[in-house]
Amino acid sequence: MWTTDISVLLTESLWDGSGRRVQVKRGVDARKIIRLWPVKVNSREYVVFYEDITGREEVQKVLEEKGKKLESILKFCPDAITATDSKGVITECNQATLDLHGFSSEEELVGKSVFDLIAPGDREKVAKKMKRTLERGSVRNVECVFLTKDGKEFVVEYSASVIKNSLGQHELFVFITKDISERKEREEQLFYLATHDSLTGAYNLELFHNHLGLAQHRAERNRSGFCIMMLDLDKFKNINDTLGHKIGDKLLQAVARRIRSALRKQDSIARMGGDEFLLLLPEISSTADINTVARRVLELFKEPFKVEDRGLNITTSIGVAIYPDHGKDGDGLIGCADIAMYRAKRKGRNNYQCYT
Image 1: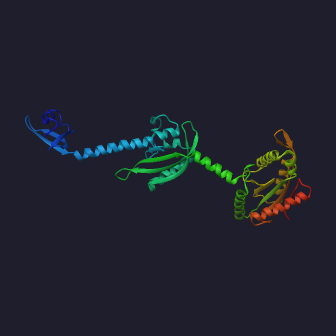
Image 2: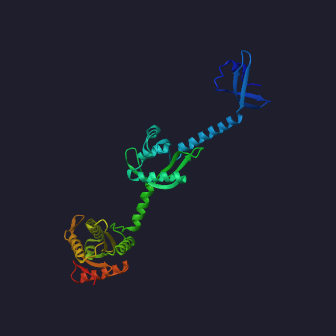
Image 3: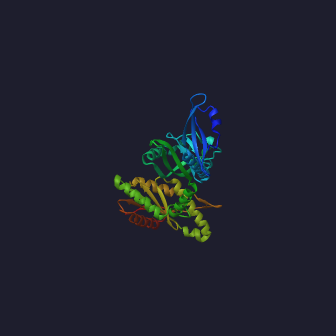
């Protein structure tokens, strides 16, 4: 039994090849969906071709429902999801992507190159990762720097996958991205606290020894040398005893800032504790160069250090040790510099001595 009057269908212009869906009752409750293609033979006769599409319709409904659910999931997913074609042109994105980059609508992003959203310094890196994604099918946990709409940089971590069609041809790149700027800042803060002196900001001994090991490795490879200097402030105890530890701490901070400002980029300064500092000077090992640097450090102490409303005068005694002449490892060199520093103290302070 037809649920639609077949005579009505036959009088319509159905022979355009498009077909019509018609429901057919079978029994009391059963219902089928068929597609009709009526062909007019003469004024009174038709030949009707039909196809049972009941199962296909049910599958289509399931897919549509799943599609709506998936669309809803993507829309409210907290991670940014962006799809691009093989050239990196954005085809789709979710709300989190818009929020991440500061766009107000999908139309602002669709059609743009994904590389427009990446900091220039990381574009080549991402292009290589996209090529690797094609080879492997996916990449995970890639860190790079992205841009907001107004050009502000932020650090992200993304994973990417390739979607292929039934012929195995690449159709889309799908990027899942999350902003990790806050996490990176926390990691950097924790690393800084673990490797720097909390008072002066100079390296602590652990990081200094790390740099010392790297300097030794380069020196061995290049058959060169380097030197370290140990500085001890002269009569610093008098500052603490007369003006208090608060003023003494601020003086140490001022001393560290002034020394650091005079060092090269590859040089290192560390605080051993109290009023003692260590300097690592890579690729400096000749007597003439060492004398020049040591005198320059002493010159830094000629101008008073401004602490609050005071101008404080202080000098330093310096001990120098050279690799490989005075030691083959970090502890040995530091010990030699310490001995040389005490010799400078005995010679009246405010001078430098090289270990012999």
